[in-house]
Amino acid sequence: MASAAFLKNPINALQSHTRIPFGHPKLVPTKFHAILVGNSSLMQPFVAKTLTIKSQNNPSPEFKLEEYRTKKIKLINKALDEAVPLQHPTKLHEAMRYTLLAGGKRLISTLCIASCELVGGDESLAMPTVCAFEMIFTAGMIHDDFPDMDNCDIRRGKPTNHKVYGETTSILACNGLLCLAIEHIATNTENVSLDRVVRAITEVCSAAGAKGSTAGQFADVNSEGQEVSLSELEFIHKHKTGKFVEAALVCGIVLGGGNEVEIERLRKFGKKVGLAYQVWDDILDINGFTEKLGKKVGNDLLRNKATYPKLMGMDESKKFATQLVAQAKEELSYFDSTMAAPLYHLADFIVSRML
Image (tube, rainbow, N blue to C red; front, side, top):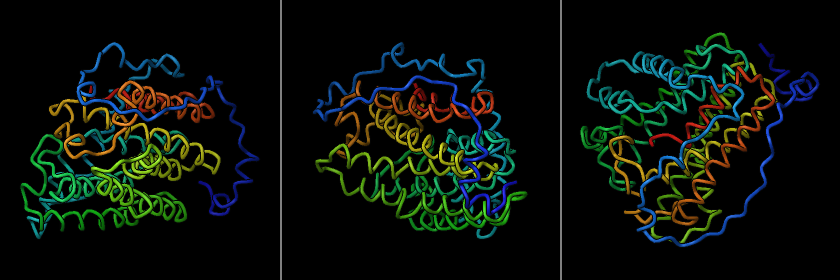
């Protein structure tokens, strides 16, 4: 396990870093221009053959992603059930558990575990932080669904939290989840040095706070019905779910024992796939299906929100998202290909999910 001095001195990491890239091809940057697209073209269904994300450039094409995800999701759900037991006051804890345990892709959590395993860490090192991300992400979704925010009635295929428990209880449930998240990391993380635990907590709080998703959500709500530039839209998307994706990957590799060079590569990977995740969400809000997504589609159009398909067009948005993923995977070429296989395939999954 790395010492605090090693963590704070990247020169040591640079001197010991001997990994050689596998030589993925470099991408030529593409310039995009904002264009206006009519709603009729946005509502065209996906053509399945054009959205099949091929993994032939991944070092481990035989990796079975669905088996990996199923195994990790089962472990994550068990850990969450234990982390938020049903206790007094019963209604409050029922509300906390209701949306938290309602299912979901657990994609951000799985990325955190895969990042930890990338450098040889066991999933148990990251599991308390994984639970914390799910608690905070769930609290954010409950907030998003309120009438004064996105005004959604369905989340994860079920009535939204405030529809079941009322806004007052839902707000208090969010408070409970947010505080429990940090407590859970601090009191349940084992076999990890204190400096790394503190660093993980800092990453989590930064992703959730006014430098992260809170800022992104604020900008998103206040941009409804406004003309928004691509740079402004990028800020919104990078500071919503994008920040959680980045922080989850960084936390995983920190807790797994990664050095500074490895941590920085995963941060760059996270920035790219985090933005790709949000761009793909924009696409799914138009061409997705409520039954698959577990939430109402078309809400962005209904609320006149800025989205990538609205500014760039659907085809360019798809290209942009897949290009971001391809650029992100270049950062993985410096790691052992077998250890990095889950992250390669999870990155592809981000731009092929829910089809």
